Length: 208
Image (cartoon, rainbow, N blue to C red; front, side, top):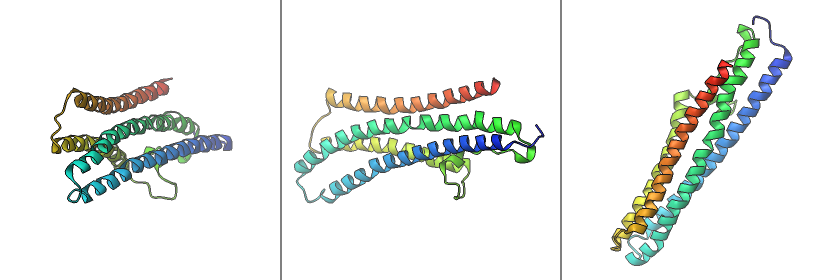
């Protein structure tokens, strides 16, 4: 349309876009807290074990480290699954803005008043310079991968600690590791399915 938008249409757009922005930013903060909550204790624990590596008796150090590494890896895996699930409302909110909020406003706006959709803008405060989409995607992906590698670190460190005291892996150990591996790869598959489903849903919305 070539007619100028009414104040009501602009106000509706600003309110809906603001709600999506606040929701995404809140979820981003929550994910950042989870990320730090996993990394900071791990760094502290690893530093403590490394510091006492040459001063403590190997058996005593192993008795301390093995439970921490085993159950720490399990806790990290569970929290990691929650971290992945938090991407679901983020992706859905952004796709709603892209497929509903922006098209509805631009359809009623003149060419000069139309808004350009930038998905990465929802992850930053308005007063900040907004990086490109590739940069934002890299940062988000790097955090997911870093937590994935953190859990792998727990597993290999646990296996190494068992080996240092001469404990051979048995079926119980393999079952425990298998559960964690299954949860890890299931979370990645779930994330991919969510992205695909959200994309298909947004395309279906456009066709209505």
